[in-house]
Amino acid sequence: MKVALAIHGGAWNVPDDELQDHQAGIARVLQHGWQLLAEKASALDAVTAVVRMLEDDPLFNAGTGSHLNRLGKVELDASIMEGDDLQAGAVAAVERIRNPVQLARAVLERSDHVLLVGKGARRFAREHGLPECRARDLLVGRARETYMRIRAGETDLIATEFAPSNDDPAAAGPEHMGTVGAVARDASGCIVAATSTGGTLDKYPGRVGDSPLIGSGTYADSQLGGASCTGWGEGIIRVVMAKSTIDRIAAGAGLDAAANAALQDLSRVGGRGGMILIDHRGQPAAAFNTPRMARGLACLEEGMRVGVDSSMETIS
Ligand code: ASP
Image 1 (cartoon, protein in one colour):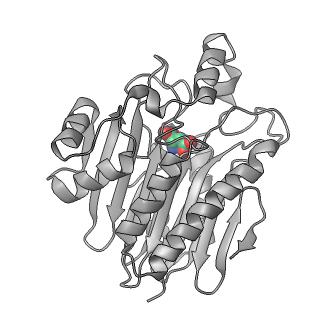
Image 2 (spheres, rainbow, N blue to C red):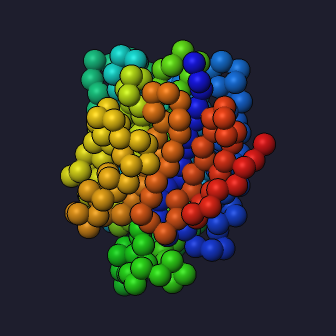
Image 3 (spheres, protein in one colour):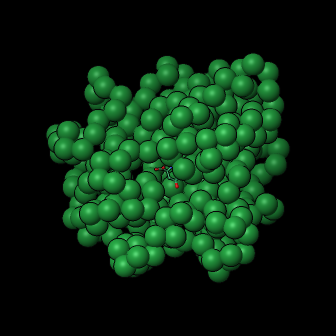
């Protein structure tokens, strides 16, 4: 069976001067995940490990480095789905958890539920030995600065989160974004997908995006494929982006055609975003309609490739 890995660090308007950092961050995590799969790690373990690494990298808007909500708090969303048995776990609007993907996995493995939110999710974390961190451990200076700028009236930072208002990729964009996600297919053919995020800029307290919603931000079926989405969650939810893409693959569409059709659906509701996917044969792909998306793809035929704008570079 062909192993494959796809990861992303968010689809948005990545500024020129951060392109190298995002590409390097993605490359490091892709190399580690690809090594794990080569050493016969399960897709569940590989995806959990790479999403944890991305959550721990303060460059990305997930785990450490997440955006602040309108009240200045970090509220996190994450999900993970295993495609052999269609098992899933997710958490939403959860505070003080350093690695929400690990908590989502605990929900998958150790509860009768799929989605736990807020205080209940924290209680479940405590009961299952996942330590709480301090709120400030998740906070990085740039997230605080962005919060202060929005409070001071720079609301165009919110409007330009996924693309500059004049659609010019060179125009000034927002401060750091970058939901993270991964899809892997292991040597047994099992496909697993996961997504983790701090959500959108200036979100209302309690707001939940697509990332923890199975079918919208994340989906995996080992017989068909797996997907992790990123972008404007309010749009992604309405077009059920991950599952609708997998349904198109099931109906015979190629990976690129399926992903591009999903992005057209997203455009219908005025949304921008992107996705990574792997089909049941182990072919990875990525697509986005934002100016940029940090992404890495690895498969046996093509090796490891990373990119942030339209081109991709092969790495070893
Ligand atoms: N999809 C995420 C959300 O709406 C944000 C992102 O992907 O940047 O919460």
